[in-house]
Length: 76
Image 1 (cartoon, rainbow, N blue to C red):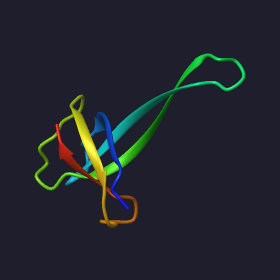
Image 2 (cartoon, rainbow, N blue to C red):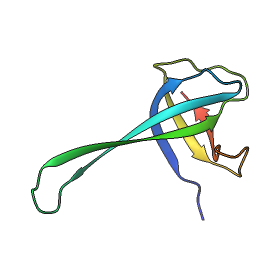
Image 3 (cartoon, helix red, strand yellow):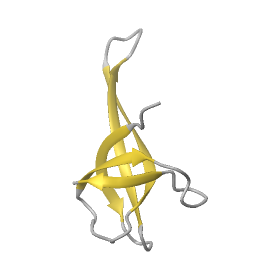
């Protein structure tokens, strides 16, 4: 099964080798037919501490790195 790749914005880089990435998705409500924006935060592994708050990054699924980290940063 291919690994999922998501694109989002870094919202926190306070922890060592970890960034928090906010990923926003848009979809049409099934009844109201109105476009809705929902966001979800993912903790991603950033081995080199290269990314800062506000950067747009792409993250990819990986094997668990820690209790909460199941994603890794692959590109900017």
